[in-house]
Image 1 (tube, rainbow, N blue to C red):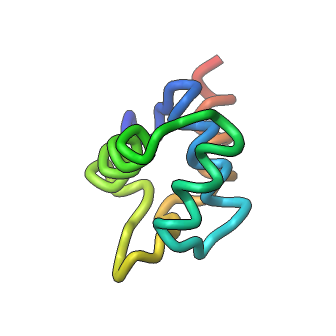
Image 2 (cartoon, helix red, strand yellow):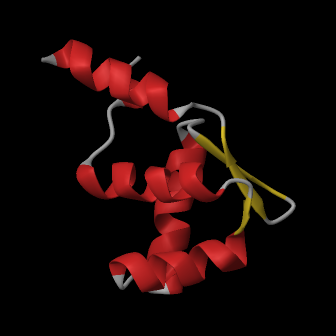
Length: 80
């Protein structure tokens, strides 16, 4: 279950996806620029990392979650 352990930037990114899913990858780039000041390459790097960990999926340029926000929050609260 360590895959649910997210650093601060990964968590903020995932929250953005959870709040807007399904979101197009292009719209996600715009949202990340607006909210975090990230460049396109940063957005895609974090997206790729979370997709490899099977937290998010980018399919046909649509991004959505495989892991729900509540699961991550529950994991984090159990770690305390």
